[in-house]
Image (cartoon, rainbow, N blue to C red; front, side):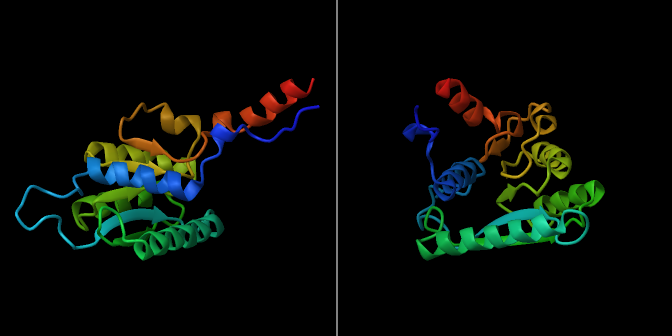
Length: 179
């Protein structure tokens, strides 16, 4: 009987994958060094997110916030992204689809974030991704992988987690190999 451990080439640390996706998206969003004589700006890269700190998804939203803050601390401790420190701007969406839309409009048009991270829940991710797309922003999401998010066919959405539709694929592959 074969082991049901994932194949070695499928193992990628989430922190590294997330950092790579954000670095690529940040470069696509224009956060790379410019051709100016002074090199790249040393101002922080402001990354915005709307999270459910209250409401139905608040337990997950607060956990997601802690994860984002841990990630930013680790990245900053190792030199930041493209030599610049990361600063998070997190707004509370109260688990509301209306508020999440308002929050991403604010993050992009008023707060002038360089990059957007998705909220917790596909219910909130689908409208948030549409706002980011409308403004031409990269949208890195890791907790909204339902088919409804990808049915929009937006070219700005970068999913750093396994889509929900494929979540059990490793299990089914393992079961098939065990027979």
